[in-house]
Length: 239
Image (tube, rainbow, N blue to C red; front, side, top):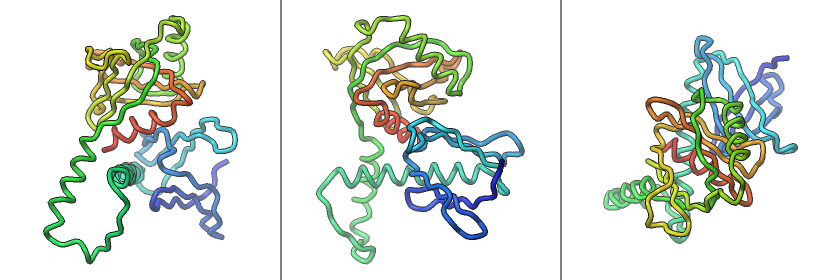
C-alpha cells in the first residue's frame, strides 16, 4: 500500500521522510542507485532501482509525485555529476583546504582546466568479456538478465576474453588484456547507452546500446564483483 512521503535530495543522499512526524523512513546513497526513470503517467511517476543493504537484492522503488518527476531526475543527474567531479579532483592531487575567499580571479582558469581534465580522464578496469548479442528492447532488467544468461550459456568460460575496459566521459572501449595496442573488441559511445546494470550473479555486468538499427547488449564478468565498473559507466553517462 502507498505511503505519503517527502523526498529530500541533499549532498550525496536521497532521504524519504514521514511528512507528519518527520521521521526517516529510508535513506539511499545516490551513487548506489543503479538506474532511475520517469513514467508516462503525466510525467508524475518516478522509480529507481538499488541494491537492498540487508539482502543485497535489487529492488525497484516507485513513487507517484505531486510535481513533475523530471525535476527529480534532473536533480539526481546534477548531483551525480557533481559527486563524480569532486571525487576525481580529490584523487588527482594531494589534499588541500581552500576557502571561498582564497579563490582569486587568477585561480579561475586553473579551476576550469582541472574540471576539463576530469571530463577527459579515463578509467581502466580488468574483466572477462563474455560477448554481445541483439536484444528486443532498449531497457529492462528482464532484457538484461536474459541476455546475460544466453551469453554465459553459449560459450564456455574458457572462451571469455580477458580484457581491459577503458571508460571515459565519452566512450567505453574494450581491448584484449594481452595486447592493449590491438584493435578494440567492442566499443560504444556512452550517449548511446540506454540501460545498464548488474545481473543476477553479482559478478556480471551488462549494458544495452542503441546502434541505430537495433539494440545490442554486451556482457562482462568482473572480480570481485561488478559494482565498481557499473558505477563508473553510470557516472560516465551522467557527465
